[in-house]
Length: 426
Ligand code: URA
Image (cartoon, rainbow, N blue to C red; front, top):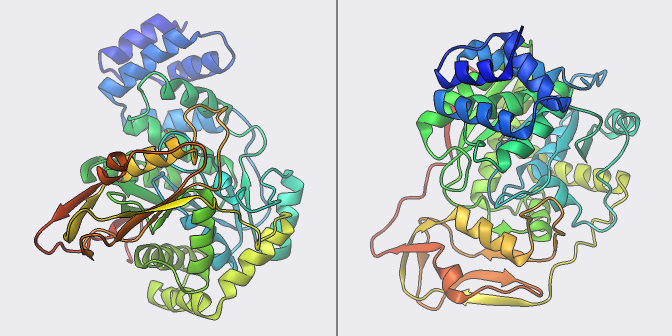
């Protein structure tokens, strides 16, 4: 007979829990039989003592089957990002890859804390609907090959409830808990193959390579055990991705990227992740896939697919309002940019109204930042460093300048892609 106190005690001693014990705790919590304070205690014991691979695999399976598991009825590749600042990759990648014949039924999330959410970003497009039925999603993907929508159906209710508790009990930063949370949702959403952009750096959940590699190894293993090929790409999140931070500004940067005028880092990331997705789905060598992806950027095929998707989901791509109130911030000195703190910029964007701290906060899609300099760039004194788009809420100059570190000597441009885990051929 299971007992939650024995389970908490067992985990606090660092022992391995059985699947029956995990199921008892998780499903008891979902059904309201186990209160928040006992679940919090178990989560903290997991944070401190970790889990064996078997426990993580069992936990993922329990969360996956706590709700609906979608059957899309066609092969599709899912792309997931572990979250960062300025990360608009999905908005570029999904239509780009769809324009090359890969089906994408993408379910994305909303902003919380300092990281943005794809769904909030897309809602900056006037009229764009992110909440549609499963039937409509399937029809849209059959028709035009791509849809980006919010979470639908009763997918992984255990993760929803556990994540909300982890968020307020300091138990988010646990590799076993993150791996099971992400993979249960990916497996429930019906894609046949999964590419995960695992962000590493000061603006990401994983701040060092060692932890990021362990998380990647676990997620690839869980994917493979469930018969879904899974690849993790470890990428830099020490500085924001691209130049735009803020919902409407990021959609506009995505459009520019699809028209061939994107910032170098975003462009490179999209080409590399896109090529991986394409090579995975079409079973072609990555070099060949890179050529196809670059060509879809050059010809504007990806942009046309985005236009088609926006129209299908009720949006007007010509109407993406940005605040008319803006201020250019100049560099206080000459030199080279050594560091741009992604976490701080994300937090400032949230304070401007671009993100939320609680689920009920209302987002202002028109505010944010445009960076004019990135790490490694040379800057002159008084040259434009960053432009702030604001409305009611404003920031102090020192808050903004604190995000930048300068150097008198040259700084190398940072690496963007650190490692790919899960595909031996690359
Ligand atoms: N993203 C998730 O979906 N779950 C986590 O636990 C962390 C990031």
